[in-house]
Length: 98
Image (cartoon, rainbow, N blue to C red; front, top):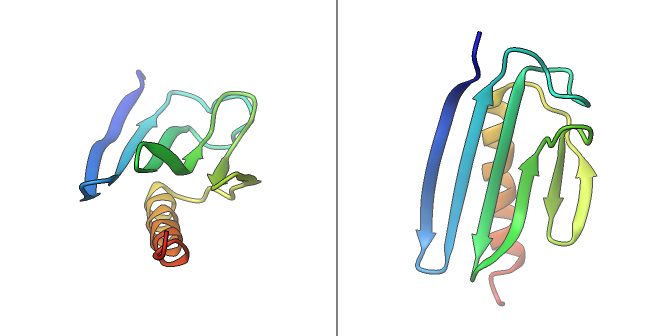
């Protein structure tokens, strides 16, 4: 089986904010991951990535929220996207005065 791209989208939230979502199903898990998905979800505000979920090889599933990096417990692609959207709402709420 070859890698299959499941998601490749850009969502514009405003003139200064957008999200990019890229998700692949792989023939086998990446090093550091227990599942066969490769993903990169990013929320960019005023040209800066303020939120990112990804699973680069060797590092496993993790997220960046502002300047903090933490492990992420991947379960399903749908839950990944739901968690990402919740964090976008959280970031927007916490930074509504900036």
